[in-house]
Length: 109
View 1 (cartoon, rainbow, N blue to C red):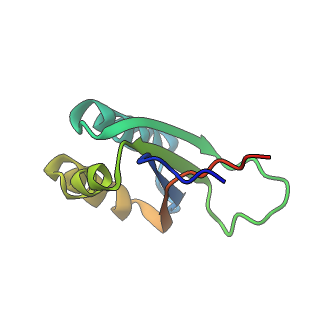
View 2 (cartoon, rainbow, N blue to C red; view 1 turned 90 degrees about the vertical axis):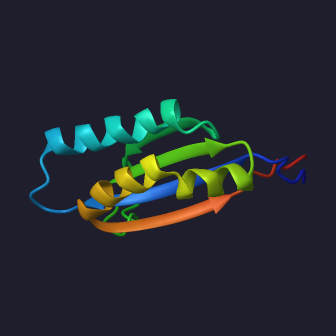
């Protein structure tokens, strides 16, 4: 196995509160995506809705995956005032949230 070489993935699972409209969710997603343009260490954001047939989602409906160059870059992102401001509004719209950060490892077979 080849350990991660600096890149860090930031995974956020979300379930929006009942009463949060699709329009509001779209605005949150656009705001999240805009962080890539404002916070230099954040290199990309991908997102999607749960489509699993296994029913193991525990109520989470949306997945957000951000990529950072380093753990230090992730720490810079978390502390960045623009992220803090965005997160305050975003998190207040969520019923449930789970965040996991990891360094991807390649399995050589």
